[in-house]
Length: 314
Image 1: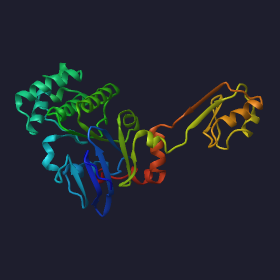
Image 2: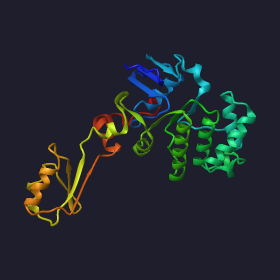
Image 3: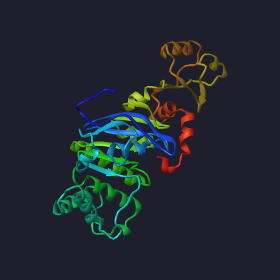
Image 4: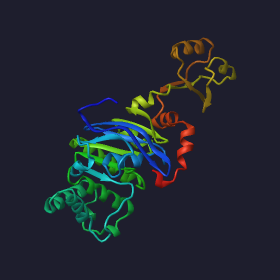
């Protein structure tokens, strides 16, 4: 495994077994400092177990990890903000007090915590909820309050487990803005998700995990680059005979055709189409999105094998 001094997290050969099943099976990770790093995978892939091992919440059966330069991740706990998948706040606490309380657990003094909580709530569009009790808040608002509590002590590392789960589109946008603000502050952000849209917009780098194994590591563009570009071509006039000139994988798409970009490029094909009188009414060449790349990288067999895994095995 490559070693770098500029890593917030390193992991080598992490293994964890529950009930005779290897939930995590030899995972390697390097999370650069200051990056937004996504751990992607279908439900039951081993994402949550991996995060918990990185944080020292559970110990790996095999392998080694470092967190902010510490071989024992718990030694760096005050420098970490963590939003677990299982949310939980004291329902009788007011939002501002709940945030300050979470900061106090990480060593932040109460006065500073309350002041920062007010600022964070305001910047997240929740200033009106500062004095409302958690039980009075919507699920999405309570989740954002807990997230603000995980950043109030200004951690060097923010770890978020499925942070977008259960949020409506407005609160998802607020969360994305908060993640980017934390990155701009200089924090490293590590989050898990099975929703590709958030990862495509936010991640500097990502790892794809399925069946407990790391299937891919790189940038979003690297992942998208594992698939060929797609061509959408519309002729000037429809003619069934055009199919003989197009690549074998061409499929009708609306009034045109869609197919993979030929290895020799698009120019020779366009010349043949023009010479045959079909013309060009429309032409676009697109790189497939992260979702399509994810499905290809994981593979249908891996998806089927992990999708029905029990929640406890995550």
